[in-house]
Length: 217
Length: 217
Image 1 (cartoon, helix red, strand yellow):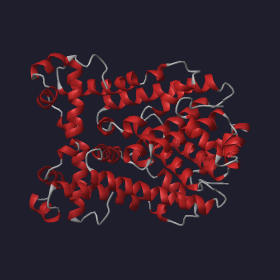
Image 2: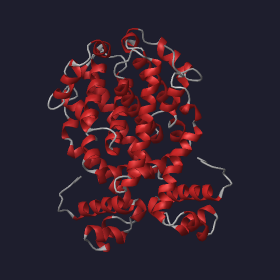
Image 3: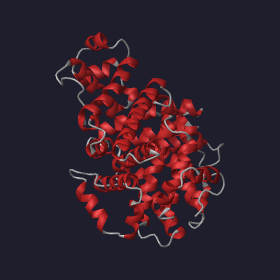
Image 4: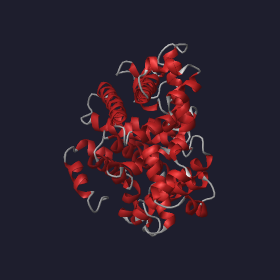
């Protein structure tokens, strides 16, 4: 959540924007409300951000970059199973614990219907995630002929799983097990076939192995 | 989107709430702004809804019930492939076309972090969807031993797909193809295995068959 030094004034302002969004929605954001939430003067905000729109857009960028900074494993070697696992599961902890952070994410999604800049930024971030997941799948399973398509499926499943955890209809553990099994199915073409014929054993292995070495082939 | 007669004053008020949310966010909702959007007097709104919170909660119920009314196939016979297909794809058209409707949905999701009533209502709707998908899977593939788990996966994939279509990172056609293949994998345990060994043919069939008879076993 802290893209820069947490003591930095600019960061305090952007955290202030998230606080206002979590409490009052995106429409509650103004130079005045953010100044109050961040404990800075309105003049200080205007020093960094010339208007409300720039302030909101900077807060979108900070949320996405903050999520990346909080998950450095996602930027690792594409051939490392931990890189792929982090890319697919980094939303689960915020969905379960930092409910206001996830709420701000949904507020940005809602705003993307009318704010083209936000939509394009979020879509770009999503395309970046898809490209990185594709890269990992190719590195970890060179025989895959449809890595891009499998990446699209895994990312959609990860998004849906995070939404379920956020709403409370899915536990973090069951979301992890689901993503682990889907990943195993992709990396080992016949895993789904095998699983259906040997129920009981593999899900247990999957659940335990997610802790440090999520992907075993 | 119209749970009752569109000429009905109460419906006009709830549509007015959605309009205000799409334009100004949930925090923009007040007796005054909704009265203006719906073209009714503030007194008329207070006749139906004693306060702003009740007005917002009624609009959440109307959105969910409106989605159900717009997709009567989803309430059909669990053994009918169209019922299952509609349950999994009913979000795609709103995500692509009715961008403000989907935006209102994300605004409710965002609000669910702090409004326990909204969270519980949305979670209940989600549990209802999961139960219905599970019922369909059992009816259409009695040999499935993990129908509930497969339903959880399919619903997560459907949620993620709708989010991708809304953001524009996924086309409606590719989302449909993805859901169709996932469904085929579940209904025919070895489909994933077969697909990986005969690429090219089955995706084409899948894409064409989604038009009227999505699920062929």
